[in-house]
Length: 290
Image 1: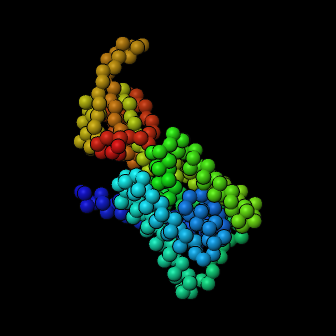
Image 2 (image 1 turned 90 degrees about the vertical axis):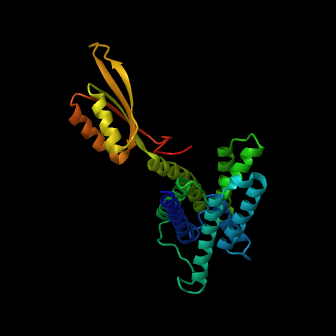
């Protein structure tokens, strides 16, 4: 079981790394989109300080931030964060090596003549990749480590501080690339990225919480425990209008199990009353650990 979990974790991290590297190298960088973080900062530095390329700046910045993380945060930096950060930077370097050898193309052109469409595609791929890495319990490093250092040594609101720094990096693209359209699109991409990451993670974690009021709570509980293999809590309930005694069944299940559970409850007790809500924060055995 542990081997299966570890394999799933590493598979998720590698999928995430590939997505963010592809979106960065082939979409964001060719369009000069600077959406904050070390990716955005390395894009700006590569434009102004041309003795290193964007992938080389990215590798250098991520390495420096990881060193700072170990100095100021110790082991909390995390081995998986180091792995993902270096994996992302290394894959960017590989793309560049293939590009310079002529196996991709002499230069990476933009995919279309529609910058906004490319922004949407690039940010969506980048955000999904980042969300997958987060879901696996890691991060791609960069500003995440900076945020943890800020949180440890100041009383500053971390989210606001990181957003401010990322916004400044995005705004610099206006002056560096001398294109206000690119700067505005970069700021739009910055906010899109945060929104999509939150949305994707919420969908990964989404579960259904059932409250079932029924005359047959034991049968409903038996189905949930024996078929779905989830825990159940039963409490006594009294209808205020009828004064009839019933059972109230509480349980949580995955989204794909919710339809089966609704159908089974109706077969057990066609008069059962159900309240079903969606939650992305179910913590406990069988779901997420803290």
